[in-house]
Image (cartoon, rainbow, N blue to C red; front, side, top):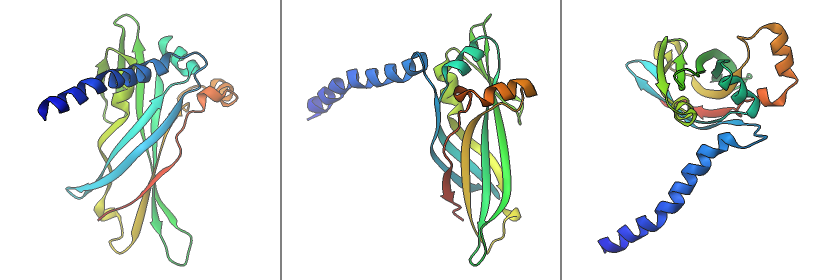
Length: 195
């Protein structure tokens, strides 16, 4: 019985390695437009704070990748809306939150730096795949205190990941506006607040 299980696992290894190789090589394809996707998101109540855990899939476009490799830092932004459901009126947007993470390549050390702009912390990675994987695992991100929410109301959260161009000068932002490869953003991902 154990031998059969081990044989099945060994038979699946080449397929698993192929999937990993395809995922890594996706960043190297020519004419790659890139895309952002929110795969999952949920909030937990921890010490009276609503904490976000989310999984993102982030693939950079060729233009963004070329800019990054040329020393231009990229900003990945998480845009979050907290919406109160109302029975007889349109739903009310209670809060709009933004969290920014900076991705930078340092050619001398050949390292990718992921910086949490709000916390001021940073981590270093040997590969772009590792850096994007880190950015795609959002954990323990404090969104809002429970006391700020009406205990009788129902709420839902919406999350969108996007490549922000706010930090660039106005002429560059206008240039990016006309170039599809800089318009990287996920669809909104929505879930109900669980109390």
